[in-house]
Length: 176
Image 1 (cartoon, rainbow, N blue to C red):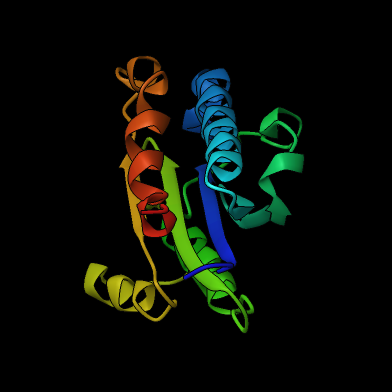
Image 2: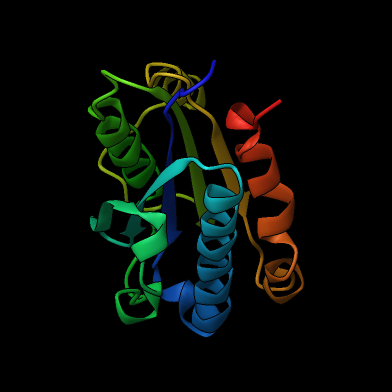
């Protein structure tokens, strides 16, 4: 459709538990690389892309909310590993917030990346995987991408992670 306003809403949910301490620089590089790629694709495809960043350890924090990808700073200054792993709480919080996103005008797409090296061990929510998936599908046009990154492969994946995943994530709004 000519003149359609395409709006991408991308969420990065970052594990900030203590086990990520040794991998802080790699995680920042991966997250910043994803943001850089999103910014390039946003300009190439003439689409608006808005990014939110959450971190989780013992609790969930929204570090950046619905900001234009072209104005997003590095997460280096706000990412601080500490504590346990509230993976379920963080995923649900980001999905709940996405579900509240205004979609009155334009064609909206949603993409969530969860980057973690470990298993759930701190969440207050005790939902099963199927219950979590049902919450994913409550969000308009959802796509959830979960990456569990082991310590051994974080460095190796860091260089290619954003290339494989973000190309898939932007397909919804690619011009034909």
